[in-house]
Length: 343
Image 1 (cartoon, rainbow, N blue to C red):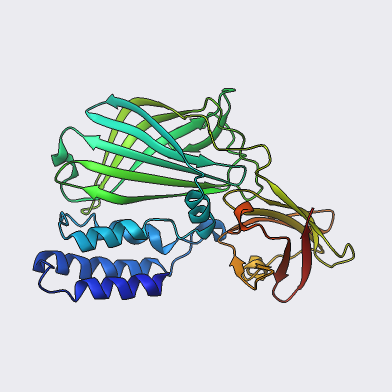
Image 2: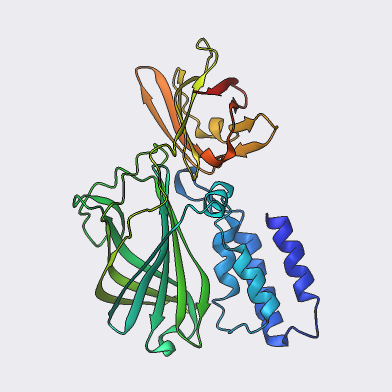
C-alpha cells in the first residue's frame, strides 16, 4: 500500500501547473514524516499503520485546495485494513447522525460498524471558532463507549481520569484525522478498536460519552476543551445472526491446536495453543492465513498468554465472512501449519 501511495503522490506532485508552491513544500515535508512514522511500532505488537500518518498531509497549517491532492488523501484513508475495506464495500456500516453541541464544538457520530472482532467510529467535529485550529497538528477526544446495559466497553482517556470499566473487551485502538480543514473548522476523527479475543459485545442502545476535545499544536502545546457530549449509537440494521462463519481443524493431532476460528464481517478471529512456554513474542510476528486461492493474510497485533505449560495466541486476520472461503491454512513460521475447514 505504501508503494502504491508513494507512486500516486509523486504523480500528483509532478503536476506543476496545478500544484501551488506552498502546498508542494508542505507536502514534501509531510511525506518525509510519513516515511519515518511508517517504520515505527505500536505497543503490544500492534503496528502503526501507514494510513495513520496521512493526517500529517493536512495538519501542516495549509488548507489544500488542489482537487487531485484532496482526492488522493481521501482515498488513502482506510487504516490499511483490507478486512474492514471488504466489510464496508459489502454494506457493513451503519449511519448514525447523532449530534451534540457544547463548548462551541458540534460533534456528530456519522457512521459506525461493529462485530465481535472490530469496531469503527466515524466522527465529524465543527468548531464555531476555527481560529482555535491555527497551527494545529492533530485533534483527538477523551471518550467512553457504554452499551445499553450500562457496561463500559471501551474507554480512551488519559491516566489522569479514572476508568469506569475494566476495558476487558478491547485490545487496542487507532485514531486519525483524515480531514482537517483549518479554514472552516471542520474535522473528521476516525477510530478503529480491536479485540484480539473477539469479545466485543453488541452495541445495542450504546452511548458514546465524550468528555474532552484535545487540540495538539505543532508547537508542542495542547488545548484541552472539557465538555459534555453524549452521542447515541444507532442499532446495526445490517447485522444478521448468521454473519459468523466457523472453521475447525482437519488434523486434530497438529502441533498447533486451534480452539476458535470465527470469520465475522470485519475479520477472522482465531485462538490457538502450543505446548510449552514461548517467551519471545517475535516468534509469532510472521504467522499468516492462506486461503484456497493462495491469498495470504497477516496480522497487525495479537495477545499472548500462558497457562498450564501452554502458550495461547489470540488474534485477528483481515479475511472476512464475505470471502466465502471453505478451506484455510494457518501457518506459523518456524513452528508449523494446520489446515482449517468450514463447519
